[in-house]
Length: 95
Image 1 (cartoon, rainbow, N blue to C red):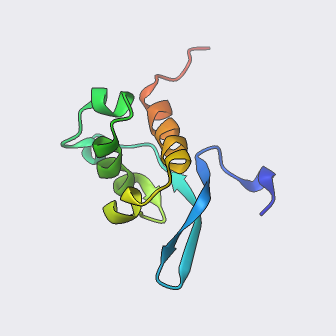
Image 2: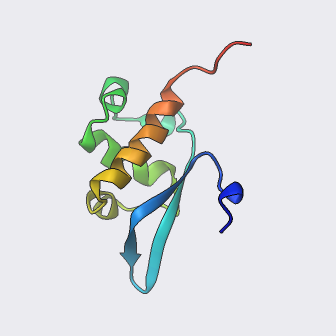
């Protein structure tokens, strides 16, 4: 894949996840909706709370990661995904 083809909300995993015969090498993160945030405190997400991230990531990733897969993420990959989630919490800059 050409780096210019990568969406700003795509995370290339340092350590791919195995799902059966499939290997997940990149994950697309979508902006969470109010419904996908149910049961999760915004402060917990803003503070990159691991439990909050493991709850939200299966709801907003493509391919949809399971909670178990999120628990197996290597730390640099979890931090990269957390950065995308935290970025969604910031308001858009006013021009």
